Every structure is written in structure tokens, then in C-alpha cells.
Image 1: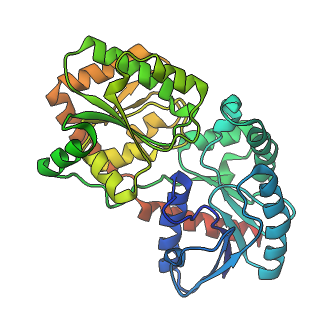
Image 2: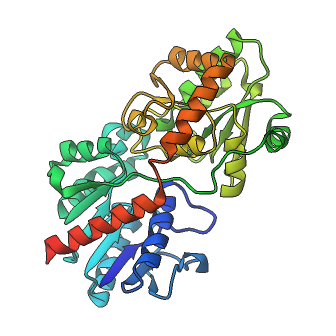
Image 3: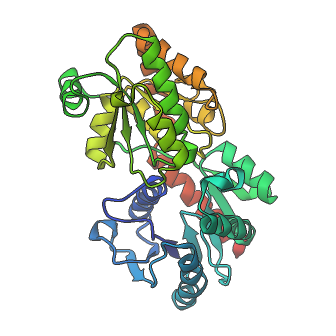
Length: 377
């Protein structure tokens, strides 16, 4: 069997949500199926660490697909020609992008449809690309995989794809994530927050991550409590909008907010495991890997009561209304002041984390691969 894979999001030292999904599932599938020939298709020279076995062949296509107009060229011309040459049994796209011109059976992994619900959060050309092409990708795919029951239902509702053609495979979290001892926690606090405990946010600083309300909520928390707790924000200011900036600038306690930029996996693990709690209050997520990362680290979680987040959190987190600064602030106040509640959530989170592993995700993705090939033959 020959499988071609869109691996353009495997970028050394720059893996984000879908990139991590691609990395963790593919390396397991390659190792588990040495009889299968995988063609990894990149848009730049790949790092050798992404060649997971002797059964992997690589192909670099131009131009680099980093802009909506270049997406069209890369997928509809460069990739189309490559697939005609490779003649795979299946094209697997972990980010959901397909070549509409290709007649190769396709399995598209669509993580979420946030752009259908909040199009204004995206630049105009990006918004156009997603809303024009993704309905077509969904109809063109032989099967679709997604990462939550919420997203499965959303894809069905938005694009009228039969539920029977959509598979759910939950994300996992890096096995690196585990609790650390108090000595390590204090070292991390000394490094980032002058020794103070901290609430933590991690993710791209994108409007749907709800940073604007998080800043206002933390300000309310600080004004109504007497403590030295900080807010540590981990992530690049790639989408730092006027609304987010204005919310931050209006804070009375903005000197209590610390930005540490993007962190590599090993350091991110230590920062996560040393937090007082993780505050992940997006207003839209297809899954929410930082929730599981915090669970694995024995860290309490505050997260939103909308979209996929209650599905992932189960009974192991405090759920809040992401549109209410008061709701978020009250959860912070409750967690900061109740050690027994923190211990209870830690215990529940460690149990809940066992549901979500990359081994399970890879096995279920492989099942989707086989279903796709069977249905197309």
C-alpha cells in the first residue's frame, strides 16, 4: 500500500496544534506499518527528524504554501502533478487541505470550522480561502476525520456530510508532560514570575483564544483579592489585534501580566507543570490540547463551557462562560482560595488525561485510512 501525506506543517522547532497532531500520529503509523510506503510531501526542505522510518520517501514541492494564493498553486497544481506521478492508494491530509483536481481517494482531517462561526477573526484573504475551499474539500474527501464529537456534528451541520462518513479520533498530549516536584516549580517561578505563583495561558494569541476577556478577568481577580499571583502568557503575538491590545492597555494590573513568547516543548512542560492553574477560555475550539497537557502535569484547569471544551474536560475542570469576565474571574478567585478544590481537580485531571493518548489517536487514524481505501476500491 502506498500513502501520500501532506506534511507541510512539519516545521522544525515550530510545531503548533495541527503540526503536533501530524508529528505524533505519523511517527506511530510509520513505525506500526513498515509494509506501507509513505510519501511525505513538504513545501520546504524537511528536517531529518521528520523522516520516521525507512518506509518514508520525501518530496518537496514549490512554491512554499504560506499564503492563500500560494495554497491554490501548491494544492491545485504542484500537488496534483505529484499525486499523478506517485499514484498512491490514498492521500492523507492532516490539516484538511486537498487538491480538488486530483482523483486520488482522500482522507481529510478537519480539526474545527472556527472560520465558519467567527470569520471576522481572520484576515480577509484567509477568510475567503477557508470559506470557499473547505466546503469543497469536505465534499471532495472520501472520508473525514476530526478530533471531537463536537466537530463531527459541526462538519455534518455546516457541510451536510453524512455522520457515517466522519470519524472521531481525539488528540493526545506529549508524554513529556507529567508532574514536577516543588523544587522544580520554584525554579520555574523564580525564572519567569520573580518567585510568584501564576495562572497560565498557552496558545496562539488569536482572537478566538479570548485574550481580551482573559485580561479583563484577571484584572478583576487582582482587584478583588490580596495575593501575589501573576498571569503568564505563553505564545507568539501573531494575531495581536487592536481589541486584544486595548484590553491589555486598559488593565490596572497589567504589570502583573508576563509574556514569555513561544517556548520549546521541554520548557513548556516545566512552565505548565509549575502553574497554579491553566486558564484556557477560548470561545471556540475543536479540541484544546493544553487542557490535556495541564491534566497530565497535575495542574488544575479553568476552561470554557462551549464547543468541544466540556467534552474534553469532563468533570475534571472548572467550566466558565467565556463571554463573561465575571464568570472567569470568579473561577480564578475560587481556585486561588481553595486548596482542597485544587487537589480534587488535580486528581480528576490525572484520571481524565488517560482518555487522550497519541497511541489511540494514531490507531484510530489508521482505521480511518483503511475505511477510506475500502470505500474507494
